[in-house]
Image (cartoon, rainbow, N blue to C red; front, side, top):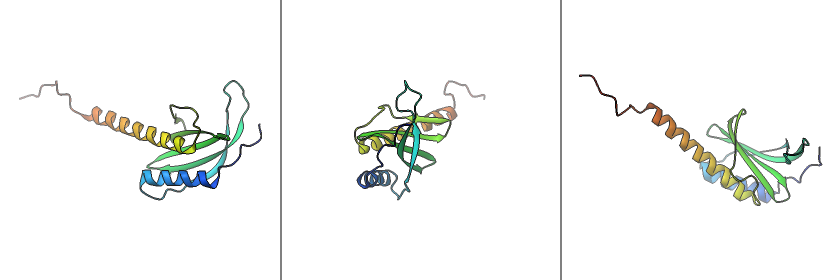
Length: 129
């Protein structure tokens, strides 16, 4: 394993806290930790990366610091069903957090629309008289 990447700065943590609280309109508890991440898909080697984790509306969010100015993010409802952002790496933590929140909101909206559509009656069916 490679040596750990530098931890998040207080300014970065505060920026995440502000963005997340604004999005969910409440104080959301952030948790700091480390995770083993395969940064290079061509190598089996894992790197220890600092992470910020939070849960809101039954969804889990993870921001990973993968370099000096490199950030990745995921959201998931269950460990076996994880979603990455469309853009793999961000240069600022703010862009990374905004992207993961936007993509989770889009996913939530799409899931609700699919569920609503599944329960709509078929307008082509005839009713019996």
